[in-house]
Structures are given as structure tokens and as C-alpha cells.
Image (cartoon, rainbow, N blue to C red):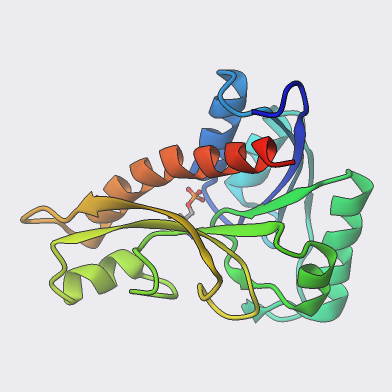
Length: 196
Ligand code: GRF
């Protein structure tokens, strides 16, 4: 750990925010020396924003010009401006359904991480649990990796295996993977805090 140093986090998500909850819990329980400085979304109604507010983070939604896919440079700039205003040091993508580009990557080199519900490089993109079932995998898992300009292609930081059980649906498997994510992601962020 960092001997009293508190890492300022920015979390970006588009949905439910269960990984944000896991991060907030780890902070509350003293397992993660961090502060949620900003919680941002591309979707104004996303539950993750409500959770961010409850955690005392600055929250905001920035709606990109296009409905999905890669962020345009102008939108990236708006996200980065807020993160910088809040002195964010590490950016966590937790269910952020957008691809970040050069503006983001230049602002936070090797300081943007993503959590993905598969053992990368297997099953990139969306529907990773369904992909694992379709492939007949008996073991899948989750990955925390650095973000680059690709989709789930960046350098792998840590992974955790999760068994596929007979009768699993994409939903039951995804739920089991998320339980593993909720342990792995705060632990990886804590290691960042320790290395500062
Ligand atoms: C997680 O399963 C993550 O792996 C994927 O999106 C999901 C986000 O879930 N990238 P939540 O919003 O944190 O509940």
C-alpha cells in the first residue's frame, strides 16, 4: 500500500455500475487507498451516475455525437477536461460501452484500465459470456487490462478464472464472472496505489 497516499480515481461506465459498487466497498472497508473523484457516463440515465453521487464523486454525462462505438475527439476532450479538473490519476472503464481514442490515451498513458468478462484474448467485444458458452468452454473468467485503441486488445494486467457450470445460461455465467470481477478490479487498482 501507499503509506497514506490516496489515489484519485475516475470511473467511466454506461450501465449498472456493480463494479463501481465493488470499488466503493473496497474503499469503505480500507482495502483500497483511493478516492472516487469522478464518475462519468455517456448515458445520462445510467445507474452508475446515481451510485457515483452517493459516493460523493463528481458525476456527469457527456453524450457523444454518435449513438455507439468510438468516441469522437471533441467528446474525448470533454471527458478528459473533467478528469483533469478533478486531478484524476487513474481512469477505470467499468462497463463503458465506448472505444476511447488518442485524446484519452495521450492524457492518461498506461493509466486507463478496463475490466472485461472473459479470459482475454478469448472472446473480445460484447456478449463475452455467450461467446464462451457457444465455444463450449469449461472455464472462462475476467481480465483487467490496459486500454489501447483496440477493442479489449490492451496489455493484460491480471485475470481470474471462473468455471462454466452445466446448465449455465449467458446470464448465470455473466453473474458468476461479475462476482470475480468485483474482487479482481479493486485489487488491481490497489496495486496501482501501491506503485505510485
Ligand atoms: C462488466 O461485466 C464488465 O466486464 C463489462 O461490462 C460489465 C459492467 O457491469 N465490461 P457493471 O456496470 O459494472 O455492473
